[in-house]
Structure formats: structure tokens, C-alpha cells
Image 1 (cartoon, rainbow, N blue to C red):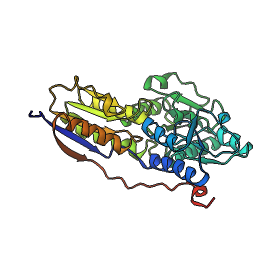
Image 2 (cartoon, one colour):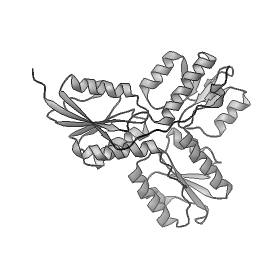
Image 3 (tube, rainbow, N blue to C red):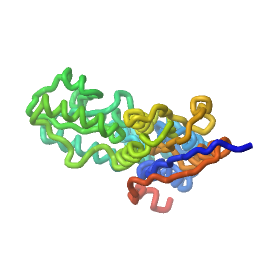
Image 4 (cartoon, rainbow, N blue to C red):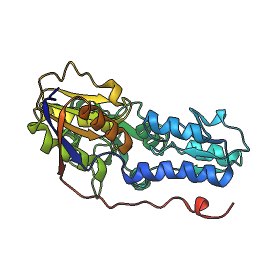
Length: 316
């Protein structure tokens, strides 16, 4: 049987970023150092495959610190936590390791610095996302106001329009954020922004790659989890760039083959917390059904690396 020809445009960069890589390494090194179980508050990164793999190695995932015993190490997820969480762990004399992505920590430090200078913060982010909760939790209640859309900017009530600064979640849509920032600056001309863009390099690079491949594709698949902010933004970017069928899939088993009937080209990328093994799985699923040509579309090269905390580099 002759298979139908299909071109797969494989985005680069895609998949794991330095912050995710570091967070997973932190859990693995903690298990090596202290043995199982090691507790992890929230999913270390938003990917079921990664979480299940670490669970099999002895990690126990919990939602809150009070679910952890005092005598076992606990790790805080890559998304960051409110200040109250490490404070509670210290009070209980727990061993804890903070796996917060250094680029998220940078936003926390920025927010604290602006607050020390007497500025009220506005955060551009998604309500309920762990990163947003963690960043807003760096400062006392009411010191950080959340906006999600340009429409929210018109409604936000601030203490003093002359004494404001803004920060953003690191995994937002670059284009959407530009619109919200413009609305903030139009309403509050004195508002202070970050020295350097808060949206992280990995989010920006993955969105740029999708912008390049989306117009060439009949369909585009993003390998990632439904609760992964940066993965969902990639689907939105593909749709905005004119790709008529853009979908998020966690595994190859979730591909809707009927929806892809008659297509000639598919773009493939992955969110920052999706491992390469899942991308390979998707490519293999296409190879089983089509005569596949893979074309790598590289728009940037990444060589960022973050060190793990010193406590894990020291002997037990």
C-alpha cells in the first residue's frame, strides 16, 4: 500500500527550556541525596508524563505544604510559590529546595524592589495560574493587582496613578501582552515597566518559531499539557498566524486523525515542559500512517543553563 506523502515542519526551539530542565534535575538529585520519598508541592512542571515518571522514582506530589511530613524534604515547583510557603517550611524546620525558575524569581525580585520604592504593582497574568499566585504572593494583600486583558486595565482601581509598576507572567502570549502594556501606559503614563522583558526567552522563542511555520501548515500540533500556559499560547499563536487547525495534544494517542484527513503538511512543536520523547512519539505515529518528510525549521538557538541549588551539590 502506498502511503500518502506528508511534510512535517518541526519547530526549533521546542520542548524543554532551561528552567524546566533544572526543576526536573532538582527532584532527581533530591531523590539521589535523601532517598524516597521526596515531597513536591504542586506539579514540578505542567506535564503528566514528567510527573508520572518522577512519581515512579519516589516523588510524592501534594497540593499544599501541610500534606508533607516534617521529616522529609519538600521541593517547590518551577512556577514559584508565595513567600508564606518557604516561611512555613522554615518554621517547621523542614528541608526544602526551591525549584522556582530563575526567570520567575527575577520577576519576584523586581516586584519586591518596586514595592520597597513605594510603588503598587499591576501584574499581567492568568488568574489561578501557580506562577501568578506565586508572584502576587511575594507582597502583602492588595499590593499586586491582576489584569488579564486590555479591558481589565480600564476597570482596575489603583491607590495612586503616579506610583505604579507592572510585571508579567513569564509564559504569556508576546503579542497579547504588548496590547495590555499599551493599555496600561495609555491609562497610567507614569507606570514603570521591567528593565528587561518579563516574558521568558523560551516562551518568546517557541512563539516565534510557530509564527514562521504556521502559515505553511494545513494543521499544527502542540505537544503539551492542558494546564500548561505556554503550550496553550502556542495553539493561539498558530491560529492567529492563519493555521486553520491548531490543536494541543498530550500524547500521540490524542491525535484526531479524522480531522487531519487529506492534509499535506503538519507543523509540530512542544511547550516548554514537554519532553522530546513525546515529540518523537508523535512523529512516529505520523510515519506509521504517511510517507513522511521531516523539515526542521530553526528560528533560534538556545544555550541557556541554570545551576541547581547549592544544597543539592553538597554531599548529604
